[in-house]
Length: 291
Image (cartoon, rainbow, N blue to C red; front, top):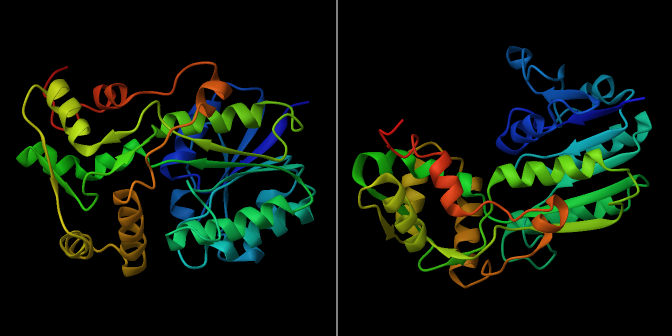
């Protein structure tokens, strides 16, 4: 009998990649979306409308589910959203929760997101269900936020100084999550997996790879926190998110993210994707005119 898996955050980057990674598997997929207008949702999943911000909206989506992929949006109420999902899962008799946390999540993390994730991680560990926590490093897909500038000017600006980061392709995060969800519920119970790419990179090295793939010069321009803050606020990014990103940038600039693990290779039986793979597969977004 196939298991039913509920995917929260179903329209986001990681959950969309997870749904793609699980396509064709012998299970029933459900996708939780917040708005009726998005209820046509992923083609391979049955879509339920519900909001982690509204505990009363959740029971129908969780009823009859064995496994929950739990992703909460970044924000000051993230622990409340995790709490609502965990409670709905417990009430529905869910067997397993696989939670997306964040790299370095801890009560003494140098960023508020990491400290909030630590609260939700601890709740998940004590939820009474089987659980696994994934803590991925900085997403390579974050570079797509700079694609407009890279395409137009051949430059991109971040307040990361000369940070070296073990960045990871979101597709590898999704495939690790799929591996956990497709394995027997006991196999990964009680595990916290820190997921990284194959090597730590500076953004100068990222620029070099972009230059090589795109066939034109791409330059990384370090900027101050204040300059990046002004840019983000000008694009309508909420102040809380801007503060969070600045805290991460300061941590990375202090070498906080300069590490890798073998966890992706252990879970998938292959190395994680390199920056060269990511840039090649997204070259069009960065302004490549090649077919």
